[in-house]
Length: 254
Image 1 (cartoon, one colour):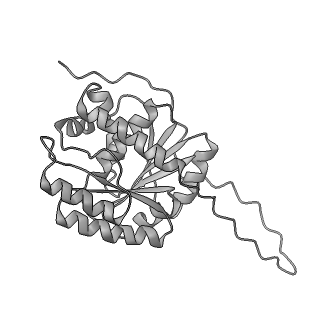
Image 2 (tube, rainbow, N blue to C red; image 1 turned 90 degrees about the vertical axis):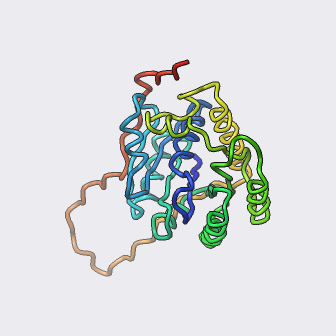
Image 3 (cartoon, helix red, strand yellow; image 1 turned 180 degrees about the vertical axis):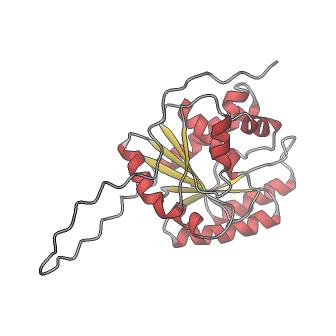
């Protein structure tokens, strides 16, 4: 199982939109996908509520239970976990970085996002996680000088995923309906961008060693242990295994 996390310390970079559409593209490519929503706003939990199909599980998990939840999903046969972290510094983002095999750092082509990306990269490196940048919400008409400058800045800081993701109405409409863009408008340019992006992420993951599960600390043995009642099994902080798709999402009207 592999785990990717969308992280950045700047709000509005499009993490939730990207996470949902990448998850859908990966599911269509044969992955068993589960989304963990770390954001207190639970944006992707609401997205799942609007989704007719139940092929992708989504659950809000507190940071303190994230490691246990990821381990439980691997036992259930999930092959890809997508984590949506809140757009701010703090324990939720740090927890995501600790469990992820790859952190995807999205940024819009402006100075504020690029500055925030540099700060996020520093924290990701401190947590020992591999990372790659993604330039998001680019002008769709042409690659402007601002976009080229942003791409060069991110390339200088580390890897830059392909393709550059454009700002398109399909992303907003798909999110509103609980869909990925590849479901909302399968023949659209945005759908092709997400298919290519998942391919780029998958190739990157192949070069990254999977993180081992954290070792359980050894229990100290008392000289005269007192008898204690058997504790009930702890419940995993994760939803049941997602069922097969119930309905096919409606196609976009011509």
